Length: 217
Image 1 (cartoon, rainbow, N blue to C red):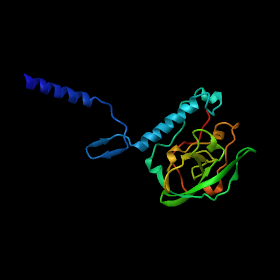
Image 2 (cartoon, rainbow, N blue to C red):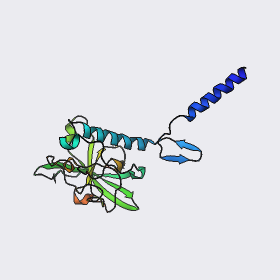
Image 3 (cartoon, rainbow, N blue to C red):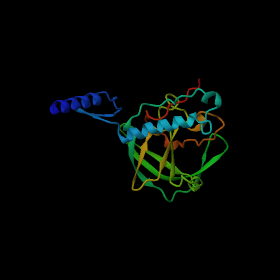
Image 4 (tube, rainbow, N blue to C red):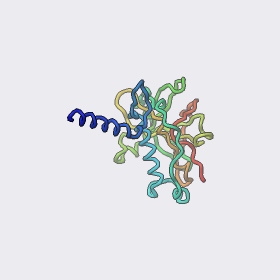
C-alpha cells in the first residue's frame, strides 16, 4: 500500500509539472530548455517601461489624441547580438561645445569618450557625450548620452536618428545595447527640442534593433 501511494504521488507530480506553461527563452541546448537570459530580460523590461511611460499622461510625449488609443511602440524583435561590449577611450581633455537642436536652443555637451566596437562585420566608433548641467541633477550624476544615425533612418526608423542612455562604467569598456535605442521626443511631438545627431556619429550599417519609426494613425 505504501509503495502504491508513493507511485501515485510521483505520477501526480509528473502530471502537474507537464501542465506548466512554456517559458520564453532565447537559448536552446540539447534536451534542455533554458529560460530567457539576463540580457533578454533587460530588453523586455526596457520595452515594458517605455510603453508605460508613453501611456502615462504625465510623462508621455504623445498628444492626447494619439495617447488615448496608444497600446505599444513598434520595436524590432529583441536580439542579443546587438548587446555589444565596446572598448572605451575616455577624453578627459575634451572641451564643452554647443550641440545644435531642432530648435534655436543649444545643448552644452562635452565628449566623455569614444566607443569602439564591431557590428555587422565592421568596426565602428561613436562619440559619447556628457552634459555638465544634467549631472547636477539627482539620479543623473553618472548619465551619458549617445545619439546615432544608421542606414535604417527614414526607412524602418525615425529619420533624425535615435538615442541611447548610458551610465559611466568602470574600466575600459562600456555596454551598448542597441535594443534600447529610442526616438527623440520630437519624433512624436513638435513642441519638444531635441539634440541633433552629430555627423560623426553616423553608422555605415543598419541597426535592426530598438524602437522603430512612429506611425501616426
